[in-house]
Length: 534
Image (cartoon, one colour):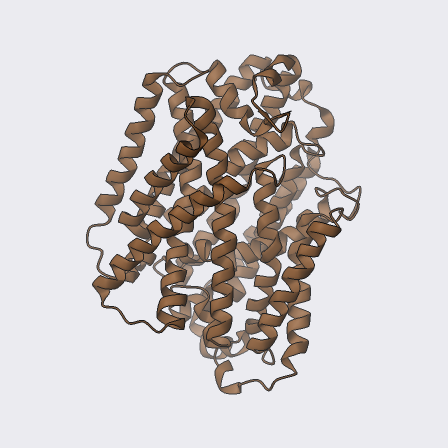
């Protein structure tokens, strides 16, 4: 089960095309604003699609079908996490993104220096850099095991291949290359998913036969059986409440997402990009989850398929079910197109991550904390060098993430949920309170992270989705109390709390918010109704 030479030709041409695109988009780059924010002239639609492409990584394409079809306690329950997305978007459109846009920042952690101090900014930035680099290692790991299995090349060389290609086009083209390559990758990827779904359904006997064959227990999209404190991580309450905190933290406090959202032309475009992403995520997630239904139905009729999966620690590696299925049943050429889709999924996550890691290192470490001064040309070259550095780090992490969970999509979310809540707590301490100070913010962050780590190691029966809320509550509450131990620097506050922002930034609120809120709320209810119907 190896790739045909024609499939390799298709893959190589695609990779060369990505590098060529980055060279084309790099024309006219003059400074950090061009490199990190694309000159602030990108429309809402490309940014929304790019954001979706980052979300729809290899972790999703490999992990979600494996979770739906094979993981213990899995199934379409994964769709529950999408119910929280529209409500998180509303929160972000009111409290976070307009504030960031008004401040004109590149690194989202620059807000923390304005509100608290340089130390708070540095700590949050370094935490982001480590967590995001390690989490991205999961993505590199996922696609690299596919490359290794499908081509027969050593896993190490598979990691190097993916890392080098992404580093080259990202370091050259900057944020514009990230955004527009992601748009292309999203189109290719979604086409590959749809094609695989139709082939799988045809082999099973059609749509109706697929639904009839698949395990009915795994068809449930909502589970109200517990609150997620009894070892069942995939029930409604942790998915809705924990997911709400997860998405606010991810879209509002994670540089890899916020940097892209700050690349728009205006605040209204930023909100519109969030809105589009919130609306389009559910159909996308439903599609690749339904791919798991198709694979599961096929395996029910053809149980010998499991024997084709390579073993990992003595057990079949279900994360490889989709690529193994593709190689077995797709014609020559079509296999290459699907593999391009998997490459696209991995690169769309890796490229945005290493660009944002470069931005935070330059802005938060070199320019803010170390107070280094550069010319525009020097800054541009150093930014590109930092992109290469972080791309290398992320590929190295890929060798250390294989044993976190039997589904890589769960692995990625567990890693993120350790820090999501505490990080969100720090930002909201600054935005929603006047009393909080830097000492309280850092103390709350550490406390929230420690508590979540304790839950991971010693209280595993509590759903990891709850960590997002638990970490936030611990950070916000403990940080607020510690802030009373030291007098707040009132000169630093205004206009960086939400209350002062409303007074000094009323022009931001001329946007027709009711339009967004009504549609997003209706969409959330529609998702809930659809999930309940399943």
